[in-house]
Image 1 (spheres, rainbow, N blue to C red):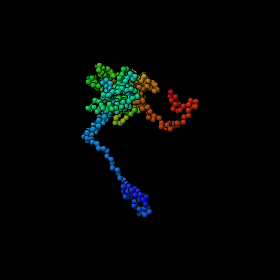
Image 2 (image 1 turned 60 degrees about the vertical axis):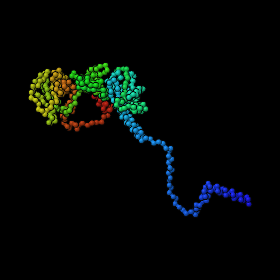
Image 3 (image 1 turned 45 degrees about the vertical axis):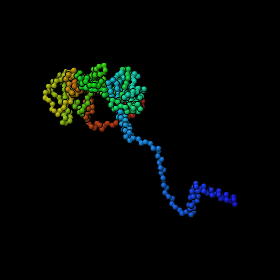
Length: 422
C-alpha cells in the first residue's frame, strides 16, 4: 500500500511539471482524428514578412553638406570631361598645332613636322615629353606609343584629378606634346596646312602676322616666306611648300574637240599655198556660240616663204569666240619660231603645220597662259577619229576572226598586238 502511494505521488509531480512547461492544452490531443475529421480545403498560404531589424541608430548626415558634396563632385566631373575633350597640341618653339589624328604616334608626329623643322629629321636624336598642367611625362617608346594613349593615361591618374580640383578654371590647361632634338635634315610632306603657318598677300602683312612661319607672294612671280625665331626674322624665297600639292602646267578644253574634217580642210589650204606660192598661210578657228559649232576663217593676209601677216582690220562677229590660230611653215619643220613666240601672247590655242611636202605633214600645238606656253598633244585638241570618209558598206565586209596563237610563240591576242606595235 505504501509503495502504491509513493508511485502515485511521483506521477502527480511529473504531471505538474509537464503542466508548468507545456500548459494544460499541450497535454491532451483535442484535434479530431484523420478518419473522423471533416475534409477542409487547404487555407491559402500567407507570407508574413519578418520585421526588419533596424541597425543601431546613427546620426543623420547634414542634407546641406551632402548636397554641397554632390555638387562639388559633379563640378569636378564636368571640368574633367571639358578638359579631356580638348585636343593635344604639338608645341615647338612658337609653333602650336592641334593634333587631330587620334591614332598618331610620336614618331608619326616627327615625320609630319620634319619638313617645316628639318632638325626633327633624325629620329634617333629626337625625344618627346608630354606636359599637362603641372604634370610632365617622358615618352619611352615614340615609335609605338600613341599620343592620345599617353594623354589618357595622365588624365586617369589621381595626380591629374587633384590638379583639376585645385585649379580655379580650365583656361590655360593644355596637353602639350614637345619634341627635343639635336639633328637637322629634310623629310616628308605633311598632309595639311598647320596652324602655325599663315599666308598673306603682302610682305608688310606677313611681317605684322604673329605666326612664326608666314608665306606671301612677290612681284617677281615667286613665293617668299618669313620665319620668325627668338633670334630674328628671316626672309627668303619659299623653295618648297609641302602642304600644297605640286602644281603642273596644263590646259583642259571646255569646248568639244575640233573635228578632224576641219583640220583636213586647213591642211589642204596650207598645201595649196605652199605648192603654188612657196609660202606660209594662216587660218583662224572660231566657235559659234549660237549654232554650237566650229567655224574656219582665212583672213586677208600677206605671205612669203618665211612668214605671214594679216591685214584684215574688220572685227569678228561677237557670237564667234576665237579658239585657235594655226599657220603653216611651208616645207620646214613644225616648230614654233621666235617670231611666233613674240606674236602669240593671247590666252588662246596655237598650232603650226610643217613638212607639207610629205604625205603626212607634221603638226605642233600649244596653249598660251599669260605669255607662258604650254605644249600640248594634237589629240588633246583635235578629234582623232574623223567622220565617215568611206562608203558605209566597207564596214560590212569586215569580219573578226578568232585569234589562234602560234604554239611556238605562245601568248594572247593582246600580247601579239603589243609585240607588233613594238
